[in-house]
Image 1 (cartoon, rainbow, N blue to C red):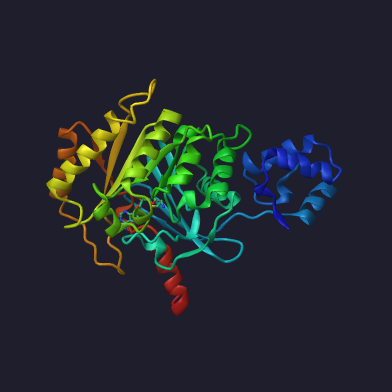
Image 2 (image 1 turned 30 degrees about the horizontal axis):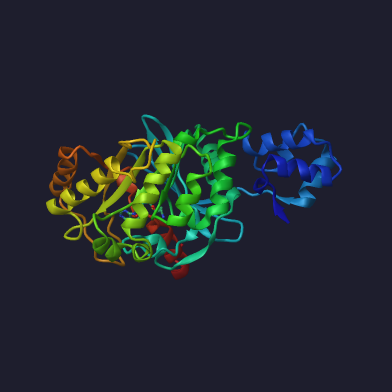
Length: 362
Ligand code: SAH
């Protein structure tokens, strides 16, 4: 049986036709599902009882079940551990920023990219999340907190471009004016850099913000941190990023997780500056192309995970790194740690939860 939130509006209209219902029912139902964020067919009070019954017979309707919620007393950050319908566990985070309430969602259960410092990938990929499972992380948090979510970042567990079809369906549905109607400019997709999918994404006509996980000024260091760097060297990746900008006009942000004695020296900051300056000012030189594309570096002090020995540099060293970039005209910020009292690296909370379940302590 199909999950009803998996259907976009045209698909839902088609289903209504198949079920010999009036097409306008689709609009009503879609609004219950994606605007009013209902949890059950019973809530659909402007539909007749027989129609609600028919929907129940033909579709599943599920919201992820919060099995643990951690709240920060410092800044209102909340981390949610959700159980999916098939029992898989995922993690989502709510953060309150000046520019609006932001939810960080997962795009896969686990991940197969293997980045060395990331907890989400330690046990590989279990499965992709469906578009509905990405949407309902946002819906459920908005319901539970009773606060409107204005920004979504696809920066939780998983590699979004490794789940391309579901990701793009999610983007269309969450920005649909008949749903949450989130502005695509308030939607960020973070990727480790799958070149073919990045090129494909450039052609979708989206207004997304792209965050590229760079983490190194050259291929040699990058390969030590990210297996994907062996498949797509910077000489292929960076032109693809520039192409994304040229097709969308959107600023790109580069994530750089700073790891002690690995990628945190002044020389590496200088090398990163030249790499990005070349990218910004250079391009391929084709006629009519926009110059000087706006880019930004987000320095993330690495979150050490138990299973690996990476360490975070001293604060001063990260600030020096930032100053080198700025001196070279590259805008850079150090990511503010949200919910420091409930901290935990990406995917670590989920692992803790699963670990407790396995050992029967909860
Ligand atoms: N697969 C996507 C989204 C993953 S997480 C991507 O690679 O971009 C979002 C960001 O957090 C990525 O830049 C990722 O490399 C980084 N990250 C993951 N674990 C981390 C850790 N323990 N410390 C610091 N940054 C981490």
